[in-house]
Image 1 (cartoon, helix red, strand yellow):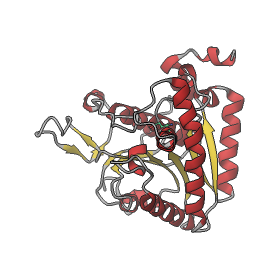
Image 2 (spheres, rainbow, N blue to C red):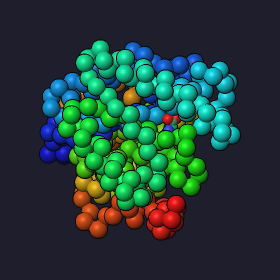
Image 3 (cartoon, protein in one colour):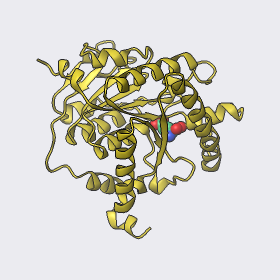
Length: 289
Ligand code: GLU
């Protein structure tokens, strides 16, 4: 058994969806039929008794589209204004689509500070617990409007892995615009071969993570491998799939051979707080904020 069959039994699932997956490639507008299918599939998972968390990007992209900006905003204040506009619009679309299936949602916006400060982190953890107990699907994003360089996660691949670790999820699914992990960048090297299962994230695997950021999203393969390290060390399997066809989510949970599966190997020495803190700051910096 390669571990695929076990994916059926997963109980607490975090699904991360990227901006390029939920928007139209040509216009940047929301892809409503795709979002509708997402709402249906996630509600069905809920109805099967699974606990589901959705980490959705798109705030900046949706805001930018609404405000009529032709190019990706570079300036911080403009990006944050786009996020403020876009997050509200994104949530209202999600609310409407999920309401059709009678599924309640909640919005959870986080910064790195939420994870590093003991009280904030525990509050976030108990909020997730309450929401999941009430069969609500939390919709998570970074709080881009207040994030600064010092306290931002920067990409939702990392954020979703941290959320998976925080809530002790047993599966994280990253939906983006790439099929999964290749030995090399397939757009540049025709010899590149696809990797279906990763048992251990070693140096060879890390070297395959050349960054291939998309036009709209933020995370490339390197951030996905970093996310896989957090998720698998904390005890969750992680699957990277191409969200072109949203039904691939069902394929993953039926144990079909799609995307790249990174198998969980709980590391007793893995300390979530140390991981986040040492990425940029010593932890006591945040205790003083
Ligand atoms: N938080 C950003 C947004 O909602 C997305 C970050 C990412 O693409 O990973 O626009």
